[in-house]
Image (cartoon, rainbow, N blue to C red):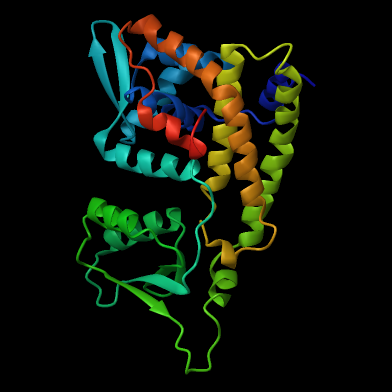
Length: 308
């Protein structure tokens, strides 16, 4: 199997939905170049995935309605950019995607408590939704927790939702002098770790053949810039989809071996092999509509521990 065969087979058996694919391309390819793209360039970037002009226009319109994208017009031309409100979530989510899964546990849990009912129904629903997305679990009614919470991310989340100062946020550990169940048992009750592991295993099965094809092609027939862009996008799209369901638990609380670690190494290996050629395609597409389009920012090259 060569790289083109792999692309054709993947798109035939597991074609990504246009809306989710646009989000992936913005996060992986557009944000490092300033976060704005002209519609003509976006049409060119989506074409290899079978997304036509009409479907793309409908997709970006819906994303704009939902507050993810903002649109601007210049005569007959339109451009799209991630809204300031959505940018913080984009940056946080994609920083997590490219970071190694090596969080360690100090034995404590972070608990978020709505003890005295200061939140109204809409606020409670929003907090629950966002904390679940961040990997928290419902420990008990009115209590959500995580064993490796990112304090800065939690504070940003609460500030963004307008509920800062309305919730109790505490850290707790087991008391050694009390005979009690170990806090590690909360993992089995709070998360379906087996389902997350299954997602990573499927990712490994899908993308290991691509790595084999890239290794075989390295010397004789390296992928074209467009092929490299398609492979990089499908890689991050699939990896992101699995990561959305990963609560990012500490390694000490995960089964061994953990397929998430293997999936990260596979994603990193493939990304390192295709990112540079993919950047050539991205630069060309952006500069066809804007000759002054920026190259990837310096932070882009920190992905997966450093691109070289």
